[in-house]
Length: 586
Image (cartoon, rainbow, N blue to C red; front, side):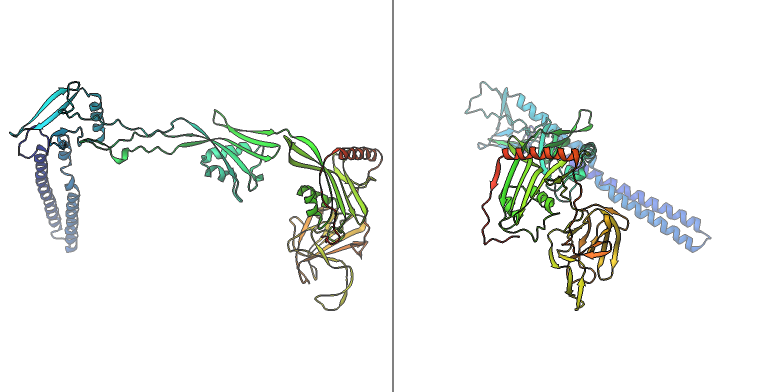
């Protein structure tokens, strides 16, 4: 049923317009075909006229060209013809009928919903919402006509007046339009770069590049390690959302919903990187911030920590490392202790149950909580009843070392064992060769260790041989002072930079344990030569390095006394139980 103002049986005007539009298409098609045929005929006559007296092939080619033009014209006509009535249909859109809803009593009510564009529908809805002064009640007439009576809103009776409800106002999706500061923490994954972390978090690549460039003067991104936490700050500015049209049905009035394209859908918020913060050390923090001018600047913040001392002692039951941990000693301090005494004690063979240890070191505290371990000031090892005690001392030239009671450096001229965690599998002297099968003098000591274990230079010196030697495989020979030489065989590989003429220092990695040459398994063959003669590496009495004298010795003794006083006042961390007779040493 269409509300046209009368109840006539005649078809609505828009139907007539549609018929007129359809009939207008037929002459247009006929006219297009006529023009195409004329074009084809003219082209054919032109080609045939020019082809008289000429080659038949030229005539045929002209005819084919004319036919092609004709087919092209037909194709264009077929494409354009469906749109020939579009303009007429658009003109009749304004005369589209209104939809009328029927209530339960059969009364017809106007719905302010027209088949107009969304831009036209919105003003109509607003107009109906702002003018509620009167309502219109329409009743069907038996004579075939509809009558409408306007009644003021304040006089309308609930029983007789059918008031059209006011359409619900447009709903606005609540979104935060102001800039918001967002903080996030990210742990660096293994193999990831700072650029990847920033861009994955949403930072613009250009901003990330400038932020990293600002960070480099105070901290190199290449020093970042897996697991490092990085704090990021962004300022997000959400885009404003479009208003969402509502779909409401109240009583007998239906309010049309807006097209789906007008639904409120906030655009993706923009993210601006404003700050980067990381803590490479417990007492150091690095920050990068974006200024109002858009440039990034970096700053380094040093946290103030208090310094204190800790003392621990214990007895070895199973191994130095495990028992020292039970005594409350941090792992890094234990490793330093082993390095201190490795020149005078063989931890693989000389440690026994009942041997004791003691250490005194400084550490950093933050509000009473230990956050960083410092340096060892004093350490002692008692092996088979013989004490070995060392103190840390900084010399006049700024270098430091560990010294015993008499001012002798802990460092020996040569190291006893140039590889960590090894066990002796073959000593110096006569033995049955495992490959050749006959008795032969063994000119060194074999230390079994896993393949790839680092091999250290036993002392300061110069590389004399670095290459393949028959029987020894990959082989290195170092020349030291006082006509001493050390040799290292069966390496799996040489360390970077190790070549003839290279100067090395004591403890520097020169290669890695392997099984090259005549070998039955991965191990290090180690030799010591004195004036060209091969000697037992385990029986050589090594001279010490630096020896303090005069004022240096007096200053060292003063430092030693001060350390012992501080140690007596320091609290003990933990004391482990005494060793049992049945426990085994490492």
